Length: 333
Image 1 (cartoon, rainbow, N blue to C red):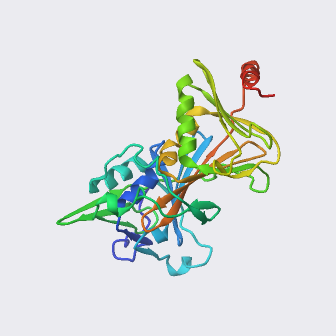
Image 2 (cartoon, rainbow, N blue to C red):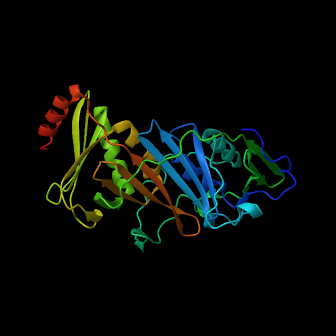
Image 3 (cartoon, rainbow, N blue to C red):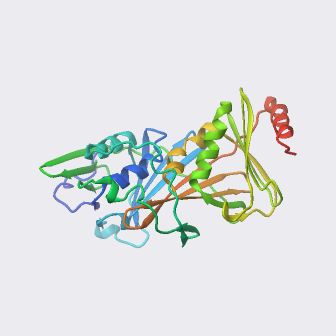
């Protein structure tokens, strides 16, 4: 993208922020690392990163300004209004993650997926004290500082990593965004809302992988079986059922039976978020659009949210009979 501001180096940047922990930024952004590029939207409240896969899957990470020790948003005088937001831009997500790894971040696979804590209600999810979380400095032992800045539209996104005696500067080229609209979820027509521990969803999705599935069927019902995940693939079919026990399904709002089918590999793409999140909110609307919202603990006792949306699988004419057979095998209508 060509520069639109020749004096960007001399003017105050549109945006700048400082974080005492590159680890929490890395872990959150890695949750949506299923495509190579991400859209970035800068707002006065924080940074919004959005990725999309073939218009059927979207992942969104919002880095609230509270995650940063300093956050400055300085639009120009003619742009300084309540509703103004700079145009979104696109950067290489893989390059950003590689840059953040310079501070010595290690991939501790599934290290945080089996935390066992007590929780109190916060924002419709649950929270509370327990063992150190994925971003706790007690276990990270990371002293580096991460600085982000964006001078103006068309300029690179600058990432500066500071360690004792070492400073690394990386300028990521920005591009025009390739998409603008998000996958719509009809919030006034929600067919189901279920909140549970994310690790249980993570275990269930992995359990179903034994059949090499191509599809995931999600069934929720006000009567038993209440919440069912079923897979079908070349090696057969499998089912995981969840009871309505409040200790298992913290929130269960299902006025009527719903059945929706999704591409298994897309749902599997949210595994990183499942592995480090404490809770997940599972919602779908009457059109079958699925929303998985993960609540992830960050250092300082706060929370961040990672959202995924999925378009339901629409069978082609030749798939109808196969789906009916799977439904009969699993007790579906």
